[in-house]
Every structure is written in structure tokens, then in C-alpha cells.
Image: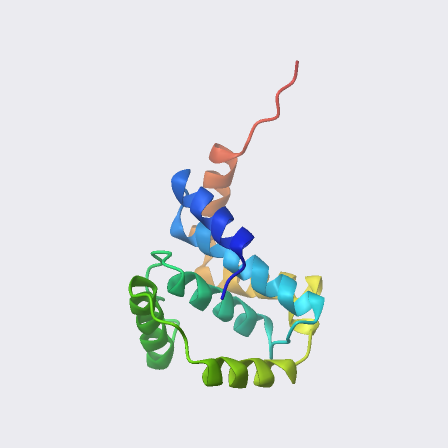
Length: 150
């Protein structure tokens, strides 16, 4: 279950009209924090991000399904299940939750290190291609918050 502050930050992002991926970023940030705090671990950075996205979908963030060319059928199926779970409010199985947490406690904490996150970001950007990166940089420049000089 996501923390109340995370839910509030995500809702605030939604009210401000920010994209679903920005809203989901709050859940991913929470997951990275949990790993850094030692609450549990993750096998790798990609798993930590996946857990955060799953939580976001279950919390009702309208994230688009993952790209079919870059993900397995199992991943897409899980994303669909999470989105459906986000629409209906059923309590997760306590036994399954405990089992998942027990398994994650055995994993390491280096998945949330700054170096691991940077490596994941670079790999992800490279996989998206040059044209996409150029477009993202242009949008960042266009929508950058300007500091007021008085």
C-alpha cells in the first residue's frame, strides 16, 4: 500500500494536469526510498521501477500499457491486471503480500544507488533512440521553469 504522502503528491500532479508518467514517478520515488531505507531490496533497478509502476496502476493512475516491442507478454498482462485492480477496490491477499515482502527482503540494496539509477536512465534513453532524446530535450527547454530575476 502506498504511503499517504505519495498518494497526495500524485493526486496533486493529476490536479495540475501533469502526465500519468509524472504521477507514477511519485510511486517510483517512494519505492527507491524504501530500498534506500532498508525496508526491502530489489534484484535490480528495473525491478524497483516496475514495483513503483505497479503500485501506481493499482492506485488508479491511468498509465498507458507498456510498449509491445520492448516488453514481454507477461509484463503487459501484469500491467493490464494492475490497471483493472486500480479501478476496483479489493484488499490484496495478506498471505501474498507477506510472501512478496519476505522475498524482497533477501535482495540487495544497490539497485537504488545513484550509479545504478544513472546507468538505468542512460540505457533507457539509448533504447528510445536519438530522435526521441532530441524531442525530449526540446520539450525540456520549452517547458523549463524560469527563475525570476528582479
